Structures are given as structure tokens and as C-alpha cells.
Length: 91
Image 1 (cartoon, one colour):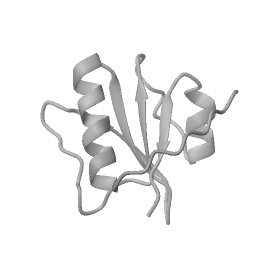
Image 2 (cartoon, one colour; image 1 turned 30 degrees about the vertical axis):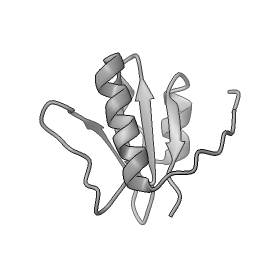
Image 3 (cartoon, one colour; image 1 turned 120 degrees about the vertical axis):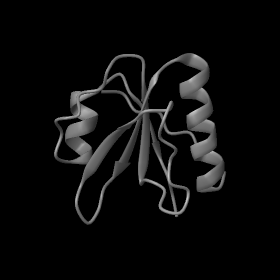
Image 4 (cartoon, rainbow, N blue to C red; image 1 turned 90 degrees about the vertical axis):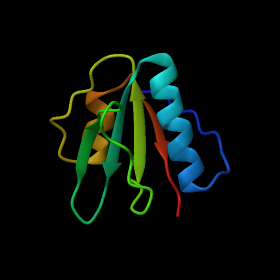
């Protein structure tokens, strides 16, 4: 699995707005990933859900295919979804 690291300087709110916009514009799947203290990954239904701007995820992912949501860790999510574009959201 190849990695490309590009620094994107934005607030977490700006980044989440960017991800929502990309998902809507290109019709891709969006996933909010919380890494700790317990891992959770949740597909975002953009028709009804809005990303909680007060508690942004640790990562977000975009995928053209339905993502495999069976992962129990961030690493497992990345392995099971090699075609996802993942964003690490710094704090």
C-alpha cells in the first residue's frame, strides 16, 4: 500500500466542510473515524447526517466503493479499504 503525505493546513471545521463538499460533489462514500479511546468508524449519510463540528473525528475517509466497515482498528480499516483516501485530522 503506497502512502502519499501532503500537508493541508486548515482548521478541523474547514477540513470537514471540504470532505462533505467532495462527497456530495463526486458522489463518493464518506466515513468518520474515531481512533481513541475506542475505535469507531461510521459511514456518513450526507442526506441526513452532518459531521459534529464540536467533536470532529480523528480521521475521515472518502471512497468510490462502499467501504468495508468491519474493521476494529484504524490500521485494519486502512488494510480493508486500500482505495480510500484518508485524511488525518490534527488537533
